Length: 77
Image (cartoon, rainbow, N blue to C red):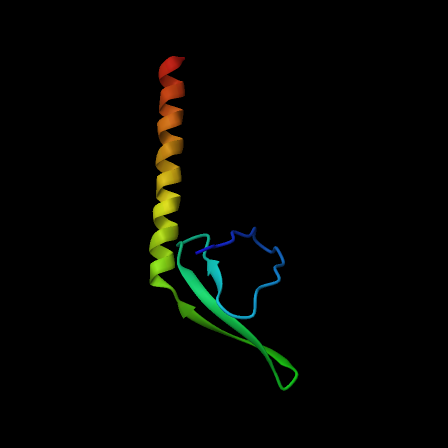
């Protein structure tokens, strides 16, 4: 599973099906499908619980590693 993080307001060219988007505030991941229908771009969204769990675990691990490194630096000073 690959979830791309974008900055607020950043443009992205998504793939047509199975595009995953993670909310920067709550960490929920949604799978989005896009199509062109009668000249209009449409999209539909599905909550992806498995991807949300994996992304949150990865984020939490990175936060803990960062906190551990900061605590070690403070202890050396």
